[in-house]
Each structure stands twice: as C-alpha cells, then as structure tokens.
Length: 278
View (spheres, helix red, strand yellow):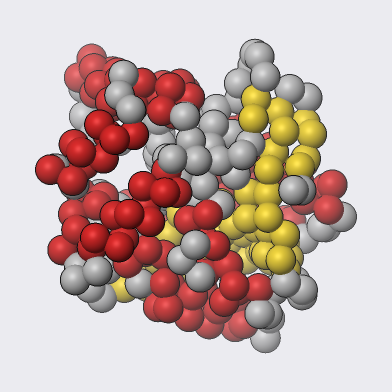
C-alpha cells in the first residue's frame, strides 16, 4: 500500500498505469475508490500513470494529532509533496467537487508544474450557501453535525429520503439501487466523526479568488453535469475567469459524474488529456 509520510500525516495513494503522470483528487466523503470502483482509474491508466490520492480525513489517509491540515491550502501542499516524492517535475491534475477546490489552489499557487488541469463539478469558493455570515455558520455546523452525530446507516437513510442537489440525479437513474450500494461502500471507508472535523475546517472560504483564477495558464477543462444545480453557475465563473479554459456540460448527468456516467467521464477526460499532448 503506497504511503507518503508527511509530518503527522500518512497520505495513502494508488499508483497504476504508465505514461505522463496524472494525479486524481476525489470529493468530500468518498475516497480514491470513487475513481477505481467506477472504472475511471482503469480507463485512464491505459494511457497515463494515474496517482489517485486519499485526501486527509478520507479513505486510508491518516493524521495523528495537530495540526490536522483539513484546510484546502494544506491539502494542496500534500499534492506538491506527493509529486516531489514520486519525482514528478510536471503532471496533469484532476479534481472532483472538493478535490477540484484543492486542485484550483494548487493551480494558482504552483501552476508552472501542471501539464493540464481538469475540474469536475466544482468551484473556487469552498463555502457554499448563505451570503449572511451568521446563517452560513449555522449551516456549516448543521452540515458537520449531520456526519458527526450519526452512523453511516443513519446518514444513508436520510440521504435516500432527501438526496439533495448532489445526489438527486443519481437517485433518478434506473441503476440507482446499485449506485446507492456502491456509494455507501465507498463512503464507509471514512469515519463520520473525522468528516465532521473536515467540514468545519474546509468549507469556510467564500472568496472566489478571481485573481488566482486569472493566473492559471495551463490547459484547463471544466466539466459539469447539466443537472448539477450546485455547480453550474460556478462552472460558468471558472470558464470566464481562467484564460482559454474549455467547458463541457455532460448531458443527462448530475454531480456524481464518475458514478452516474463512468464511460462518458473517462472519455471526456481522455479526449482532453490527449489533446494536451498534441
């Protein structure tokens, strides 16, 4: 099991394939299995060396003691440390949802190292929802408590009753029962109490960082599902502000792109990466 030891953290990652390096970042509450269990890792590893990380607070990555480093900037630093440890001077980077938020920070801080940037179902601000600071703080605590005070069975019982903007499209698909089962298997790699701590540290930044977006110069692909209500507007902002960025809207798809449409997701990524290689 490949591990990067970094101070008080042990960063787990999966390493497969050969070719130009491509680092994958998953979203909140899942793990690197989001890519592997849906077949996306295998499809990409046919042409690239794929490194799928477990972000801090997720999967088999562990943190012992303080600081936990659940903020987006520390998570971006983990990317740099992993690339350095593997000897990657330059690499492709892909992030989904919260992982895309981390990828953006890597791109505007150390963009010269990126061969390309792929952003799926994401935006530049980590804080979502209310503009009023007090209401936003209340929502953040409710979000954290949803994970911190329940078991996975209770969490998924609530999610099945009210899928919300991130999962409602998946719940409409004919294969929804299989997808719900797979998603629960992946999520159960995580400890709900640790996810609650992650929520409180990560989802706090309302700044869209426009100047940072404008500094991104590598080839950039922005992917969003047409039913991803939470990130359609954010994807427009990314497309406007990142120089020469390409935007692709996936028809019939919601937020969970790799689960809902793994073949389309893989093909979209590969077409972009192959074009970057000229």
